[in-house]
Length: 349
Image 1 (spheres, rainbow, N blue to C red):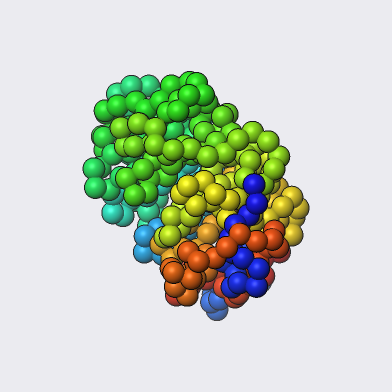
Image 2 (spheres, rainbow, N blue to C red):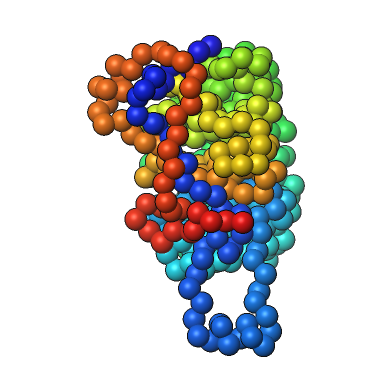
């Protein structure tokens, strides 16, 4: 399959911004008392990312959460105040393998731990006011979630059960979507889910495809095949959508991100195997925020890489673009964090 977007000599569609590796990348300005303290006790070592698997920016654009099963913790980066906090316990329970995170009701987030098969709800500002969801029907291995604010329903991907459990806010299971198989609407070790335009987009990892289902689980469409050609999928581990409903699929085996339209046409390939800017080593998670900033968990490189979706000058211009060569387009810009807010430095070594 040939890449169809953007055509030759068109404006770039994805811009590289920077990366986040440690708490030092927030680059806070040390105050006088901290400087004095460092003279006596030494400067505190920056807190590193160990193996980030999921990332989320709060709706106000000021807090970045990273779920890190490699470090058995959550990382909270306050982009406005430039403060870092590491969380390794929630509601008095140790985190074992936090792999999924999503927005919840206003001011809260959900976190799922695949090893303890637990879902937590906590305040997005500081991780406090935490509670454990009491699930009415057991989870085996929750790996990803997304929340529907309008219906107050939480969609939880249970990889071991090959299904999606739909929960009310208190944890009651109201329906189960999917079962193991390869037919439309069936799943094989799914790894991620996103809600957009009344559709459930699911990374159906074991079937090497992405499926779109209705909220009731009815199959609507799918794309992807096993193979090694552009547009094929080998290990689709995560997905996200931008404001124009382009679908970004993280492939852990190809070590890149492929961008598709809703019909499944390949638009662009971002990255390749490596350790440099825009390169990936077993990437595992992705989040597109409300400003179309793209946050990617570059898991084995122990960092979060950040890009921007650069919207075309007009929707008509984008629709008129024609298929062309496989030349990759990218631009680089300053800053990291939600646009307009306090931002970590691009210098992150």
